[in-house]
Image (cartoon, rainbow, N blue to C red):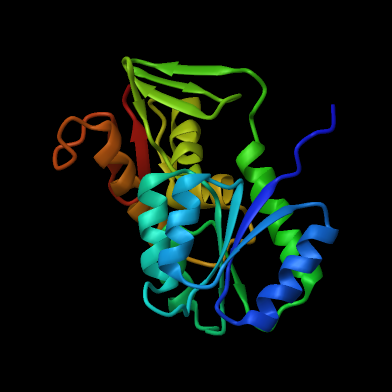
Length: 228
């Protein structure tokens, strides 16, 4: 039986660019669905979540960053942002909105395909039918499912990878720089605030009282430690 091609939802309001990208992605072996605005893309993604979303930041109606935050809260699908903005602050805002990567226009198709493969590879890392268990927390690395007791947790790809890294080293303080390298990659453009933001989101999903965390402790001046 032929293996299903990975599906990509391409969200871009520039019709010419959207058609060129869709054509190239199909030629590269991906199944592509297209949306021209944020509201339409949200409906399409909710109906059938894709394997990856390519999302333009500047969209009519519901803008790309707002859409990214909504999608990230609802599903773990990896997201690559497209934007004409080049500043580091803009990149940090985009990544902290829940995106997994950020491509600046103009870009080559080769660069975009490389970013797609890198993001999907990071998402697939550790899918070797291994279970991680620490206290009430349980991760199925093969299926990328997370549980607290019997309750399944809806984690984004980065939240899942961050929790997995902490669970692999229980009781050990991991620095923000180390977490950035292990979870986001050594070539990540950003700073330690990205780790702090994702820790906050993670605590909201796994802690009984996120304002007084028990499972993930802050180690002042260093980073974070899993106490489970």
